[in-house]
Image (cartoon, rainbow, N blue to C red; front, top):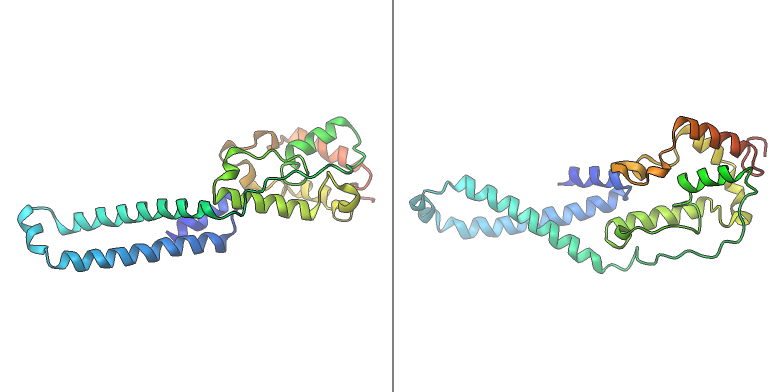
Length: 207
């Protein structure tokens, strides 16, 4: 269960420690429930033998059912956590002097979902733990560089070109499972974007 939680966290970009905590809660609750089941079944082993139902088969079903129900219950319970529901888009105060409309278009496609005040919040951004992951991505992205508040973000913006060249932006989970296909830039589009960024004041290698 913990391994599944870690893999899931990596796929959606959720903080791994948080995913592990949720998994541990489910596992601990499941073990407690199964212990209660074992004690209760200890006195009814004879009836199982008479019914012809193998104890191992019953136990397997109980384990699977317990994990499924506790996972669903945990997912339902975490929906009451308020974090991740404040989907705001502050005013746009200043943008870079983009070298061309095409450069801005490519940046919007690849970066504005987390690095701007024009975030389009998807429907699943209201469902935990996806809402937590998305809010964390946007908060972290805006704090690093916000192209809608460029006058106060320019200090970190000079890493933009290098991030694109390294292929580290956008991150892999952002386009997983066919999400955000517009951000999955082709080689030609990346070359276009690199050329445009090099010609944009504040984002070029020489700035």
